[in-house]
Image (cartoon, rainbow, N blue to C red; front, side, top):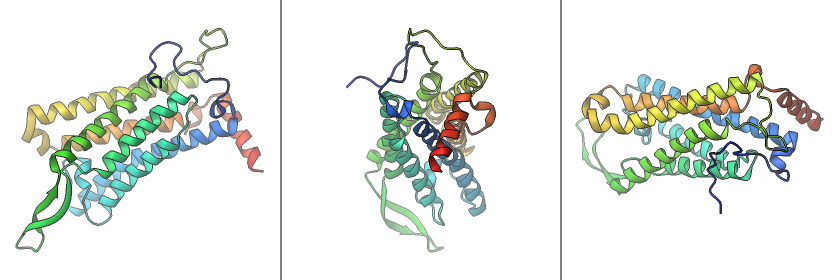
Length: 264
C-alpha cells in the first residue's frame, strides 16, 4: 500500500472514480461529519476544565480525568471514542485522506482505552476520609508509552491534516492550479494557524515536562497545551465542515441544496 502522506503540489487530488468526491450529497455529508468531530474536540477540554473547577479537582492534564467520578471520566473516554469512530467513518475526497483519518481514529481509540498510568485494579491504602490513598495499577509503564505514543501520533496526524491535506489546491485536467476563492483563502489561513498551534503545543508538552518539571505541572500547563491542541483541532474541522457562511464556496452551497433536495 502506498503511503497516505503526500507533500507535493498535486497532493490529494480527487480521483475521477471516487464517489465521495463526486457525489454532492456525500460531499455534504462528509462536511457535516467534520462539523460533529470539530464540536466534540472543541468542547472536550471546556467540559473537563469546568467540571474540574466545580469538583475542586482541576487535573494536570486531560488524561488525568480518566478515572474521575461524576461523569467526567466517562465523558473523557466517550468523547475520544466518538472522535475515533467518526474519523473511521470519514472518507474524505481521496482514499489516502480516508486512510489518514483512519490512522487518526486508531490513535484516538488507543488514547481512550489505554490510561496514562495503567489500569486501576484495586486500592492498597485507604485514607482517613475513607477514599483510596494509593491505587493498585496494572501495567503502568506500558500504559504510559502506549497512551503518550498514541496521543503524539494523533497530534502529528492532525497537524498534517492542517498543513497539507485541508490546504490542498484543486487542479484542472492539465494539473494546473485552479483559482483560489476568497473563502478558500480564509479556510487555509485557519488551517495553517491551527497546524502551528497543534505543532507548537505538542512540542511544548514534551519539552516543558522534561525541562521545567514541577513548575510546569504546578501551573497545569499540560492541560492548557492539550486544550489548545483540541481547540485548534476543533477549529480546523469545523472550518472544513464549512460551519460559517464566509467559509463556503459556491460549490458548497450547491452541494447543500442538492442534499436537501434528495431528502424531499
